[in-house]
Length: 146
Image 1 (cartoon, rainbow, N blue to C red):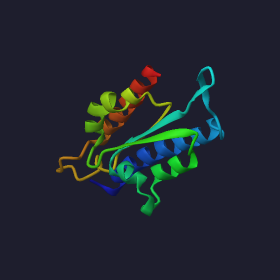
Image 2: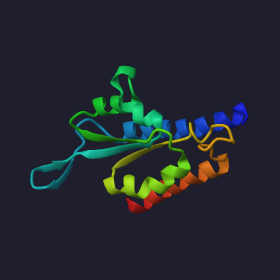
Image 3: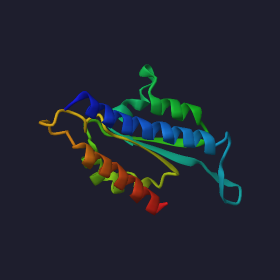
């Protein structure tokens, strides 16, 4: 696989994560809670769904990105890590409904691509067109449920 194809996988995944972060930063303000009943407040819920980059995102020794989100939103937002080391977008799509939609997140990070972009002869490889469709279908399913 050429460097440009690998870069495309990374750019798509990273671009989606940056766009989601920008959206969250714009929409949310400190102390933004929702009233579910008389004097009962429900925190927003964020789910980070991805491969080993997400799984290890709670590693505070390496300044993991999921840990930073959880620290930033302490007492305001529940951040759940649903990272699965070794998963590609094909396998994630199969697990998406059971693993993610059952959580009913308010916001969702989908961060796959590193394993998809491995050498075409490997078991983890997913062609770029299929990768794009896998991510698109997970996003569409999440939109339908919200």
